[in-house]
Length: 85
Image 1 (cartoon, one colour):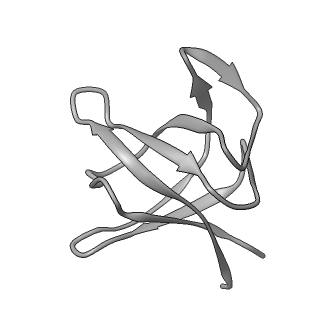
Image 2 (cartoon, rainbow, N blue to C red):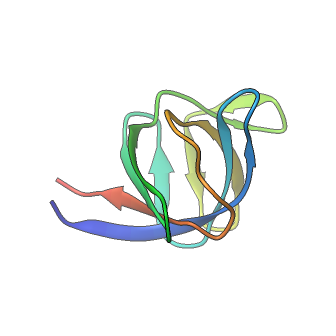
Image 3 (tube, one colour):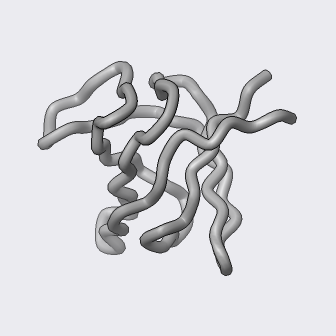
């Protein structure tokens, strides 16, 4: 499936399995699927919820930094792609 690069991982909180992602391009909505790729990372996840400063949001745009729960460890500087159907 085609993918669009939409951001980069800035931090990973391992105790709660949450990635802090900076959106640099396009938009991301709850229900979208993301693919996080890096040197040793290859994780695909559905976006079930997003938060900004502990407040749930439905969509994020370029310039936003969001927290998203992910199923596996990711690393800072990993690229984030939105899977486009």
